[in-house]
Length: 628
Image 1 (cartoon, rainbow, N blue to C red):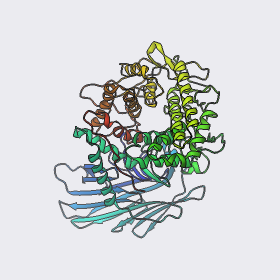
Image 2 (image 1 turned 180 degrees about the vertical axis):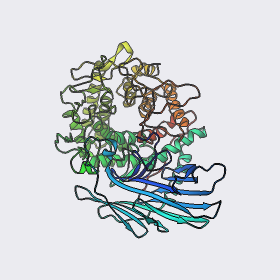
Image 3 (image 1 turned 30 degrees about the vertical axis):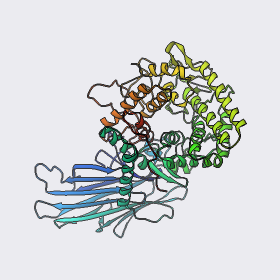
């Protein structure tokens, strides 16, 4: 795994590089649709990698680089100015090579290779298809790599240059004899009968500039450094989006999760619905189109259930993974109903348009979503797949006070909150549709759930709530972030919210940067772990929104301030997927988590969702509509 990772992206096309944007090792590559087309894309000048002097991303899809000959020392002999852009249709790499010392010719080479590996293989999936039979052939102006997948899908990487390079079997090469040479490479990653189409980096840059202006106009923060975090947030949301028939859908994170995810996209949509309604509407409609309709024991599809993850790579297309889609999630279905209800307040026709879908989701909540019939929404660990089908989905994240993994039908706290919010959303939608009696029925169901929840989940000794109920209905008395997160849903009675906030902001859970997923002193606590002591900004942000909802404005502002500080402390001014749970030290940034996605969808949404909590923030309005 790369110790430092860089990413350029637009739509479903993206480049993953090392710390200097080079594609040469590890998971680096040029990707599209869950396939790594090129696993080598590396410039060399006179046999050595140029020495970067400046690498700057003016936009999430654009790298501007100034470099020099290797071992430049005090005097540069050859300079390279580079603009590398990734648009939805092509990757474009423009170089200007300038000779400053001497008159001898120089050799420029672009090393290329293709492996057409499935994303899961790159990540270390245990089942692989082995080396691909890649056909390589020189073409006019460049080289083409071709591979026909096991299901017959033709994949091509087309690399063409102007002026043309000479293909020597490993690289395109040029002999540079002039004082200044301009060179442009265009790469197209194609499947099936697709043909190369030109990208337009200038137009895409103008779109980003317009987006930034709208942010500055409609949501102004007192501190310019906070404003920069906010602008980065909205740009990342635009960058993470990929087009679907229903509109722009947010990827869960880079580089591994450029695909439809249920839980991730629904939480993003709930966070940005008031600012970026087109994205939220696209999430609701897209997930409705993929809703479960039958029972499938391999994919865990059930009628009415909302997907967890959908993939389109060769392993999935040929049946080697269940992600076609995979439905291993207990929380996406109530989140879907909640989102449709929230959106219907501003878009009343949506409740009628998606009525078959949200009613099917409600039926799932009352049947398959509650397999033991106790009124709580549960998941059962899948021995061949995801053990914990909730947001803390690592296999070791949910356990008893004795440190024993959960088993049976498991009910975790935040999912009950999502169900509560879903029932109230259903009540509002039925009233909107002129059916007040059915609305009252769902309000009563929500009230009964809240009453049972309080009796089963309250932990008086800690003045907090338990993580969940194990399959034997025994409470999981482990101090975690989830109850604070659950404040966001409204299921926690107002009189208990101050106690939850106080515990979450106590020294065992509060790191100074956010709320630890697992408290210090608990079994399995480790500040550098995925879900057992790290800080996830979205989890902390939802707690802040819940505190604000409960009238705890000072506490909510404390949390929002910490998250903006964490983003400001990052070299790129953005929140990552998670960071280590070490206690905040004066003048020291958060300790990074080595494998974090960066950027990540939830955390790109956080500054936009929390901006109103910062002091002197002006009221937000709709910012923009993404292009369709």
